[in-house]
Structures are given as structure tokens and as C-alpha cells.
Length: 346
Ligand code: KG4
Ligand code: ZN
Image 1 (cartoon, rainbow, N blue to C red):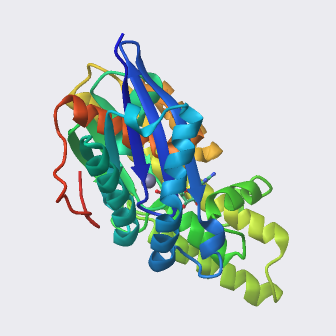
Image 2 (image 1 turned 60 degrees about the horizontal axis):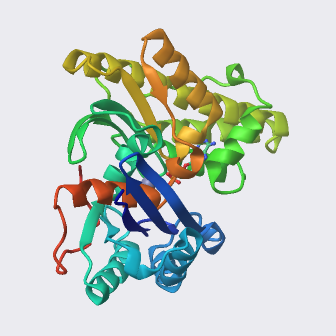
């Protein structure tokens, strides 16, 4: 039985990653998936600094590739193709991963595959659960928020998405406002468990408008106002109020994502009822309250809910290797002149 081995490389944001995927007749197996984060490098700046990120990717990418090969017990010569994220993302970072991929592909005489980072996320449920097409996907991360109908590895319909911030970005900004550590998602979630959502009335942006578009930046501003009102009244932010604000914010995000997912499901099931599936990916899909709510909405609508394990939900190179494999099967390889793309809608 012939196996295909794909090396995947990811460097579009603040994680440098390399992975080896093995695909046989029985399906794909992730042999290794190495992810090196950069949270510590950016912590003093309140966000990812593109120059620092790009430099760190350059320094780390070769090592990540070596580690991925070691953990998979494979040598470079056993790799059939090299897949790298070519966008969208921070251009310096994307360039450093793509340049390494080009160098390896040309030195080894192996095909180069240019992968869209969003396609990587969107195809992850096929890697983890081997589901067929089509399915509805909610991609929720620090940089992205959209509903996609996935018809094929290179055929997506966008049903809606955020018109401003991504939810993860809102979690990160709210954490900053409340003096909590980054990344904001896990720290807001942890404190929300000790709070009560009813203590603050926050808006549910765009729920009064039809369709699947979302907005999260106003919610962040509402948290800022509520915080300032508490500080004025109490001369500081008492711990219980901080927890209540976290809980109210997280519940508002959950309500918006839940109602918009319900609408996206109605649209999707109208388009193609052959496979009732809602899948999620992206860092925010790690949130317990959001996950549970999406699960219960899916159950109410008789839809199967798929959430990949966390390590494949957040940025990683296994998803890039898998999306690359799908393109490789269709001879969609790239020229050595292929460019990195800061913007690249699906
Ligand atoms: O997918 P990801 O690792 O990177 C990209 O943005 O592409 O997502 C990271 C985002 C961050 O904004 C982080 O705060 C958020 O996901 N996040 C969470 C949770 N864990 C991570 N947001 C809400 N609840 C969580 N438990
Ligand atoms: Zn991502």
C-alpha cells in the first residue's frame, strides 16, 4: 500500500509550525505536528508585532521542520511534496515559511504547494473526522470569523462573517481592558466561571438585522464603558465586578455566535440538506460556553456537531499539510515564483 507523505509549514501569524502528514488508503494520519508560539515575545506590546513575528519565524522554522521530521522518523527524501501557507496573514511571517518551503522544494526536486490558511482551517474536520462534502463551517479565531459552506477542497461559499473584529480579538482586547493576561480567551473564560452575566446588560450586535454577518467591536466598547462606570463608582475594579464583566461579555459573544449559527444552518440546510453538519475551528472554538451552546443548537436542529481537538483547532501545520495533500491530488502545485499574499479571501 503506497503512502504519501506531506510536509506542512505554517507561519502566518504568531505560531511557527511544521507537520508531517501520512496518507494511505485508510485515510490521513498526522505523524507529527510541532507548534512553537510567540506569546512571550509580544506580551509587552499588547498585540502581535509583525517585525518581531517575522524575525522569530525565520529563526525557528528550520528547527520546527527538523523536529517534525524527527518525531515522524522520516528523512526529507521520503517527503512527496511540501505545502506551505502562502496567505492570508502577516506578510513577513508568511514569506519566511514560504521561502523555506521553496528552498526545500527546489533542493529536493519535490512539488511545492501554496495553501490558503483559511482553507487549512476549513478542511480540518475532514482530517479529524473524515467527513464527506459538503458541510457548514464556522471559523472563529483571533483573526477570522466566518461561516463557510465547504463544497470541495477548493470550493467554498461564504454565508457571512464579522464586519469588524474577530471574536478572539475581542476576547484579547477585553482581557487587556480588565487587566487580565494574554491570550485573552482563556483568562476571560476562567474568570467568567466565577461571575454572573446578569450583573451587566451588554448589547447583542447585529442580531436585529437579518443574515449571518456579525460585529464584535461595539461589544468591546460596551465593556470599556461598563468598566469605567464601575471604576468611577468604586474607585477601582472589584474582583467580583471583573468576573461579572467577563461572564456578561462571554455570554454576549456566545449569544451572537449561537443565533448567527442557527441562521447559517437554516441557509445551509436550504442549499444542500444532504449532510447536516456544523463544524467549528479556530482558537475561540476552545471556549467551553461557546462550544456547549453550538452543540445544543446543532442537536435542536438535528445537525451533527464536529469540533476538532484543540491542537488542530488552533493554528498548526497539520491542517496545512492536509489542505496541501488535497491540492496535490488534483495536481494543483505551485510555481517557484508564487507570491505570499497578505490578503487572500477563499
Ligand atoms: O486560531 P488561533 O490559535 O489563532 C488565530 O487567531 O489564527 O486563535 C487564537 C485566538 C485568540 O484570540 C485567543 O484569545 C482565542 O483564540 N481563544 C479563546 C479561547 N482560547 C483561545 N477565546 C475564547 N475562549 C477560549 N477558551
Ligand atoms: Zn488561523
